Structures are given as structure tokens and as C-alpha cells.
Amino acid sequence: MKIMPVSMPKDIDKYFFNRVKDINMINTQISTIKLDIPPQLLITGYRGVGKTFLLRKIFNDQSSDILTVFIDLSEIVGRQKGKLTEEKVLKEILDSINKTISNDMTSYEKLCNTIKSHIDKLRLINYDFSDASHVLDIPIPVISDNYEELSKFVMELPQNIVDGSDKINGFLIAIDEFQLLKNIDNPEAFFWLIRSFTQKQFNVGYIFTGSVSKTSDIINMINGQEGAFGGRLIQINIEPFTYDETRQYIKEKSNNLQFTDEGFKRFYSCTMGIPLYINSLSSVLPNNIVCDEKIIKQTLQLNIDQVAIMWIYIWGRLSQGEKDFIIYLLENNGATRFTLDNELGYSKSSITRFIDSLLNQGIIEFINKEYVLADKMLARWLKIKYETNGFYPI
Ligand SMILES: Nc1ncnc2c1ncn2[C@@H]1O[C@H](COP(=O)(O)OP(=O)(O)OP(=O)(O)O)[C@@H](O)[C@H]1O
Ligand SMILES: [Mg+2]
Image 1 (tube, rainbow, N blue to C red):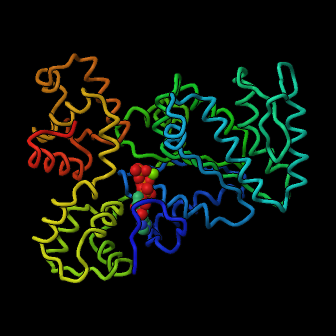
Image 2 (cartoon, protein in one colour):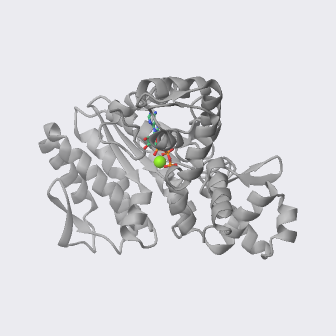
């Protein structure tokens, strides 16, 4: 039986569909790393559109002279349940670099020497080796109270690894869910920190990715005119599958799902070509009958929690004010700032906070001077919940 996974599968190639153009475009950018031109990319797109899957695939397929590190900030937040800090992010980068180079045993010895000499260079004062973490079993100093040293150590390490090994020509670092960096104390400074190191590193590429709205302030902060990268990050938006791509995808990868023409149109409009929804709706559709419009509608209605499961988690993390804001947009089909200020019943400063937060999470968008919900599945979930329970999810 064929399965269309709704979470990251181990065997990426088995489930991965198409994206040939995106892969070529991103690989073209990435390949400049071998020419001492470090790629710097910002990959955006709707939730569930397949940014993470795509990048994982691209990283998996890199030649062995390119080391790759994939940092998922949502994992740190989930694991530690605490506030995201610069230190935690840097340590995660360090940990991931460590895992990557430990896997690459061919250059093990040389890398050890490189890293040792790198540590030696840094051996200034307040270093405490007692409770050390390790890179390739080389203890590295505990520098928790010395942010500057930690950041220098971590940020310089990838280029030092490239320089210290004749088998490695580049180091790619992806920072997934980068919008979460908004929650650290001084995100601007952190972006500037990364930027300042990237200027001196010719074989280290950074790829930021996340589900942020194109009009969010975090994009401005990182890549706007005044932002740390000042427009130097090449921005690539990953689009949902087209109608035809979705058709082809279902044909190739589904467990023999069948549709009438109208049924498929409905299926496409419900899933909006977003692979996450395509997969989750497919998993609840019957595969022994030809699905028409009515079956699609009913199945979605009955299984909305399963199809929109991502929103249950996200909803649970929102504040009451943010929820009220979303419900207002839902019931009014969007709203201008002026209307929100007058009708929502929250102070202007609170509304500004809701807007910032929801834009940065890609939950709302600003289109034609109005704020609107970015994802129709969220709207559908809320509506169905309201219809069935008489109240919105709390
Ligand atoms: N090219 C693809 N082929 C097959 N399935 C895909 C593809 N892209 C995405 N998917 C499916 O959709 C799911 C969601 O994709 P992914 O997690 O990469 O989205 P995302 O854009 O990173 O979302 P988020 O913003 O929530 O992190 C994946 O688990 C996978 O099952
Ligand atoms: Mg993702």
C-alpha cells in the first residue's frame, strides 16, 4: 500500500515528488560555494508547502565535499520548553556541526587538528574545561557566560573546517523556522552577528527558511534595506503544487485514489495544492470508490481535526488576544487596521503586537490594505468547529 506521509519520512526519496525547478534553482545558488561565493538564501512559503522537505532533500543530495547542517529551531523550542536564547541557538549549531563532521570519518584526523588549533587560538581567559562539551571528542571550553567567545568559536568553525580539509569545499547551514529568532532578546543583533561572520567566510552558506508572511517585520529585520543582510539574501518562495502537479502527484504517489472531475476540483480547492493537506486529506479519503464533490466535502467535514491537525497545535500556543484577532478576521473576511483599532476591543499597542506575531508566524497576510487569514484550512477548521460545537476552539 502506498502512503503519503504527513510528517518528515526517513526515506525522503521514496515520497518526494517533483520540485525539479526549485531544486535546480536552489542548487544553482548553492553551487557558488565552490567558487568562494557563499550562498545566502531566504526560503519562504506557506505552512506545509514543503520547505523543510525540499531543503532536506537538497541537502541529502549534495556531493560529499559539501557538508550540511540542518537546524530546526522549533525543535529546540519544543525540547527545552524554555525561552529561545542566542546561546541555545549557537550551541545547537555547534552540536549539529559536530554530528555532521563526526559522520564524515574520512577527514576525521585532519579535522581534529584543525579544531584543536582553532580552540588553541581562542584560549584566552575564563575557560573552564571541567564540564566540557565535545567536538570530535575534543573537549571544548565551557563558555556559557562568555557569549562573545562562544559566538566566535561557533561561527568561525565551519570555515575553519573547510580550510583545514582538502576534501571539503563548502559548508551549508540551514536554519529552519528562523522566524522563531524573533523571540530571542535581541534578534537584530543576532542577525548582524551572523552577517558579520559571513562577510569573512567564502565557503559557508546560510539558508534561512520559515513560514513567515512576505510582509512580516522579521523579513525586514533580516533582509530589508536597514536589515542585517540588506537585501543580499536571495529570497525564494516555494509555491504550492499547481493543479496539474497535484493531479500527477496523486497519480504517482497515492494509494490509487480516484476522482470525478468535479471531485478533483474540490480536492484541489480544499488542499490549495499544499502537500501537507494533500497528504492528510488523501489519507482519510476512501480508495475503493471514485470520489465526487460530495464525498470530498463530507470526508473533510468529518475528519477536519486530522486534516488540519497542525492548526490544533498552533492554536493552542496563541494568546487569547491573537485568537480573538483571528476570529474577527474570519467573521469579517479580513479587516483594515482602522477597523481593527475601532472594533476589536483591544488597545492599539496590543493590536500591533498581535499583527507582528501573526505575520511572523505566517498566520495572517497583509493584502490590499487588509489583514486576512493566510491559510484557508485554518478558516475551515474554525468554521467547522463552530458549526459542530457552537463555539470556537478554546
Ligand atoms: N515535494 C513533496 N513531495 C511529497 N510530499 C511532500 C513534498 N513537500 C512536502 N510534502 C509533504 O508535506 C509535509 C509538509 O512539508 P514540510 O514540513 O516540508 O512543509 P514546510 O513548508 O516546512 O511547513 P512548515 O512551515 O509548517 O514547517 C511533509 O511532511 C511531506 O509529507
Ligand atoms: Mg518546515
